[in-house]
Length: 74
Image 1 (cartoon, rainbow, N blue to C red):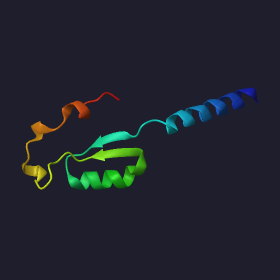
Image 2: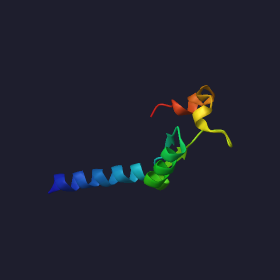
Image 3: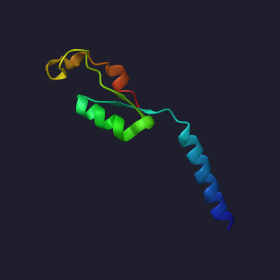
Image 4: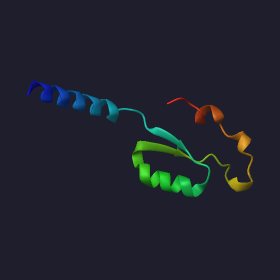
């Protein structure tokens, strides 16, 4: 019975730590992916679609993406 209480206590402690973690950053390459990622993740992730305003990303230069923020280690 003690081991069950210990495991339950550890589980509750882990859940409380996981709840205060910062949201994930999700980078998408097109608007449909950004739309679905926002709907699925909700408040648990920050969805970023790094396309310039008024420009079609299919014809954009992907070299100008903020690689430092995309390649951040988890």
